[in-house]
Image (cartoon, rainbow, N blue to C red; front, top):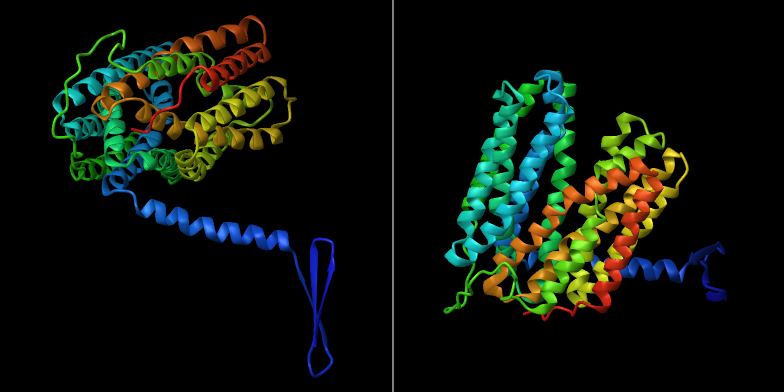
Length: 435
């Protein structure tokens, strides 16, 4: 005999067997709905990922291994400079400033040349090859100038590959898969950013000398080069009209130009992430937890980049970016206002990972939607130039406001830039055509 009684949202099922034992089973319909949604979304996401072309998977694996090697080395450079070569912070600032400036300019040049030559894969191979060789050579440097040369070569490699690689992703997938493809690539990139520091920390904990840890980067460099050689050139239209390059971007649609202006405004308030870590230390977080805090950001971004970017394939990409920039604005204001409670930093930095997941891949997918396929390399060159060039003045301005007034003023400035950029993106920039 069965009897079902309903009491609000909970459903109680009573069953009596032949031994007159009463079994009560409580079924929560809300929980059942959540399980159903979760079980239905998971196979859809797996199927979507499996449908991505081989090129996207190769580039994702390359980014995973390459960023693991890069983030295995990058945190050790300050230690190597100060502890082994006895160089100071001025040398570190000079090295990073020159390296990043050159990298930003090369991204535009490489994107333009990739569109002109139609040999995108060779730029990708050259970029990863140069960077892979340069990083471990830091171990042989005997002065800060030697480190400068190696970091310079590393950033040259990044400049050579970034715009052509983004163009290669654009040309390898259908318009409806761009968000998924760029999100998957960013997820692999962020996963490498988690793995790299953990490998370096493990090797140092085992007693390996710092110089030997740097030399270990030769192994992932060889893997990256092997994978890059397997990347094919994308199929292009039979006839592609060559559009002359111009510094005023007259060859691009007005929406793309406006997008770059709005992106520049956002980047003006998007200073170096080092300020977030500095703020965390100021609020009482111990130094040993700071790498773990940033690893949390990369982990959250790695987990959420693919689903959030894929969601933008089924909606207006501007809405996803606006949501991400709004999260950024709220978080920056909270970073300025929050009390000295280290435990509050963990959910705050996890939310910052959500912001990265919602914007990094989607911003690039929107670039691909706005420009003709044959000009994607040049377009991504402009995009990366804006992002890279404004990092230095944004960080300098943020630091000046911090020192002249207070951390709250600096974070409030970044928050205002993000909110204004979100409003302009929503109402001033036209949506991409997904061509």
